[in-house]
Image (cartoon, rainbow, N blue to C red; front, side):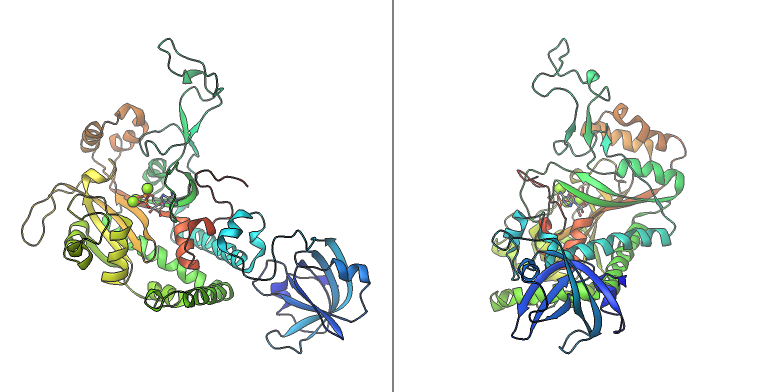
Length: 488
Ligand code: ATP
Ligand code: MG
Ligand code: MG
Ligand code: MG
């Protein structure tokens, strides 16, 4: 007798005695038999187990309800029904944990995503969420595989950081001081010298600055860890706790950075297509059903699988921020005043602008480069000449930034070539009001053996959002953290 996950069992030759363990999805009783569909999370599929009517003790039969955890032993036989090659002819059932049908919140029907968010502790037992979580796993594995195959080292950057150079206002403070009664200095300020680390500390908003230190020693590194931002807006694209993948490469310039970002994203999506066929087919179908409930003009032209294949098979569009602004200003929505935010050179593009470029204008992923210096972080490499357009208008200074924009989402990657010139970097820090002393260790890499380098950050959940076709970032992470919500 052997215990096999359902995934393997479904591919096993009939004729042996097996035990299968999992959660009951449905029980169906006919005049002659009882049919149980069992899922154990190893696959989207269930295995069917069959007993003759009257074969199972009444008490056992009563406890086999949706959600109950059971072990079923029996002979693996060829299945009569369509769909599956094998089923289990039951000889014994053991109940591990019953689930009172009066109280168990999951029923064999499609629940709304809003309802499932309220029971995030149980939703992995649904088809939709188990599929998402398996795809998420495959993508995470593909990320590590991609970088390992391409000569990168996995560098763990700190989660608790003292650097406050980035993300002002979005940081979660880390402190062991009594919040009601913190020690005070003579001037009446909180005395962080008495805090655990002897100074102010925060949860990281990005591993980039530390990642750069790694790249300027190991050549090519990547981080893949949790990232925290006290985003006070409630959007379908932002979490307070998300996972970010940040490669950083010595001797890479902006063009190399773009090439890597495109190849990387395509490669991990291809991995999911190759390794998650059943789950993606399920999610594809789910989305098709959802599309049918929409108005004809709002229905997507492409299925989820078509979209994924399209992204993998086609070059991303590449253009500068300045070119994008020209396109947006000449677009119908801008002329008719349909954008919520007006477009002019220098604005930080909003998601409505990004999505217009991707979904309406180019109809493919887009990489925008050379953004205005004023809207980007201090560490990005400054371009030599200011931006100009075809008419010869001259705009402000730009930096070698790049954002990768995806359909349905907008920004999925933000990156840049880094400023490697110490004088330019410190001058820029003074301009934006950052004390160079605060990150003396970062500046040391420019002081000693500086090198051209570049990197980017990919929000892992935004990638999972795209690959699964889901619409809300809360539905692609097991335990979403958003304002006023951290129950589980
Ligand atoms: P956005 O403009 O969407 O707020 P950002 O420009 O603030 O993103 P970056 O600092 O460039 O984000 O971070 C790199 C990547 O991390 C982004 O491209 C995005 O994929 C992801 N990301 C940023 N903030 C969040 C968040 N709150 N939740 C989930 N992913 C995020
Ligand atoms: Mg942001
Ligand atoms: Mg942004
Ligand atoms: Mg960004």
